[in-house]
View: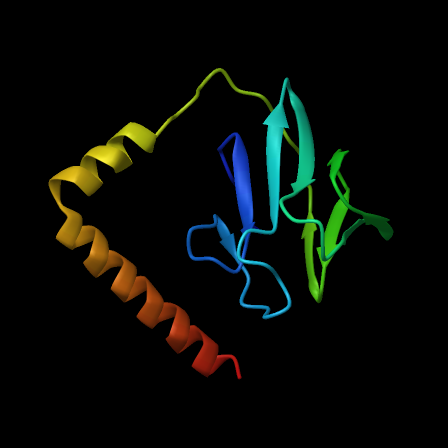
Length: 125
C-alpha cells in the first residue's frame, strides 16, 4: 500500500511519473489521478488503451470514491480514501531552479534512475 499526499499522481511507463509501471503495453504517460474541487478523479492521458474502474471499461475522465479499483493490464490500484487538506506543496519552482543551477546533476540522477529501472527489469524477468 502506498500513501500519496499530493493533489495528483501520474501513472505510466515514463520515469517522470509518480507511479511507474514497466508494462510495455502502457503508454509513457497513461493516467492521472487528481483532486479537482475536492473530488478525486481519474483521467486518461491517451485515447487508448482503455482502463477499467470496478470492471467497467472507461476512456476519458471519471470520478472516483473510496473502494473503487482502477485496473489496466495486469495492474490494479485500489482507492482506500481521499481527503482534502489545507496544505499545498508546489515543487516546480525548486525543480526549475535545480535544473538551472546544476544541469550536470540532473543528468547524473536521470542516468542513475535509468540504470535502476533496467536492473529492476532484469530481476523481474
